[in-house]
Image (tube, rainbow, N blue to C red; front, side, top):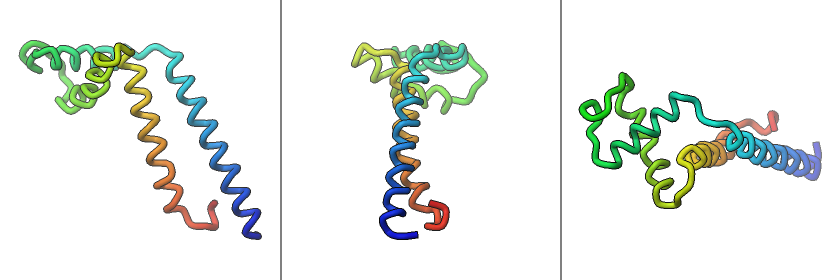
Length: 111
């Protein structure tokens, strides 16, 4: 395979991934969150408001489950946006960071 065809192949794959990422963002923002995610964000909001986990709000999930939602709930309060939309953006940002890292680990014969 020539160098130009490898570059074109990489460009086509990168454009495809970018389109898939944009499609995922649009699709994610169109659907309402499930009850479990809504409850997670509600508890995170209570904790941010000064409530104590497992005393003021009771759930069986481990604490990390709720602490993971606190950044998106906190940012939602500051920006007056939906915490679910911000959480989706965080997830897709993590995907955008992870994909190039994984891509660089693949052998050249796979790309």
